[in-house]
Amino acid sequence: MVKEQDPFPDHRLVLASILDDRVIADIKEEERRWKLQFREWSTNYIVDWKLQYERFLKNTHQCRDGS
Image 1: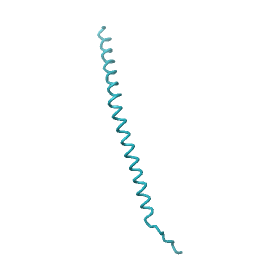
Image 2: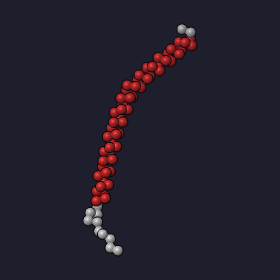
Image 3: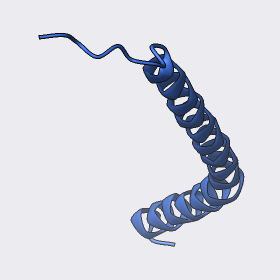
Image 4: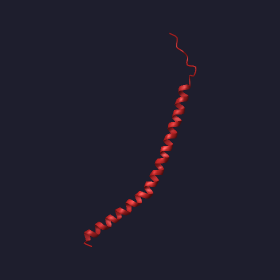
């Protein structure tokens, strides 16, 4: 049986390279979005959470002291 020779022997490598570049680009974009969302979360929500937590602790201490 004679094997048919592939007229484009490197086509799989080229396709894999293109797909890898797309995947890497997608990962980089997702990483960029994640960093932006994390920055927003850490600057907005953490500060708000900390203020509410400190207010909670202050109120808890006042209740214990009987004030």
